[in-house]
Image 1: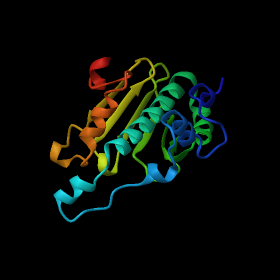
Image 2: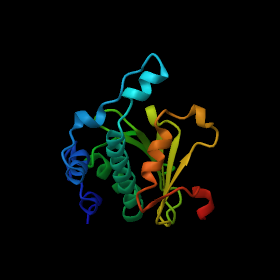
Image 3: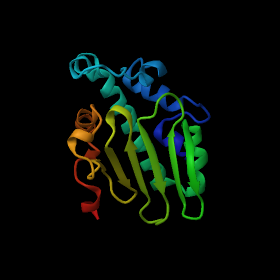
Image 4: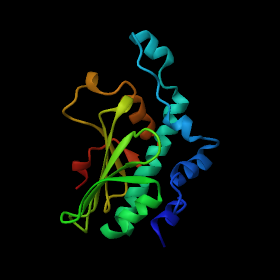
Length: 189
């Protein structure tokens, strides 16, 4: 069974992931997912007009589906099967190293919240690492094919003041999903 079928994403559709996520979330448009609040002159404006909780939760649900997709791909496919599958699911290839069996992807439509790096260097424990950008900068999601949960961490080199303005709220939203946890990935080995 193809990865796109197992995850419910429609094969061959550029917007398949968003549409399927939209079906799970209710009416969600590409425009609403790619909207980001403008840069404001002061912190008070930013707090009053920044990302709404519902918009941030929609983005967290989409990010969770995207991470689950790559986690399932890590478990069920080979490196050569990953590239066409990710493209069918709506991801754009950013970088590919066939010798090391590593690839990086981003969502092809709209603004990108995460860059996903997948490594098949060790076939028995394929890793998926997603790094956040924009208003949620500083989050790292880590998944390994032999571990059921996805770790939600902040970059250890950053202090809380260097994280994106919505990073901690976004992390807390991801931690509400049953297959996400706050345990650092390195402690799971």
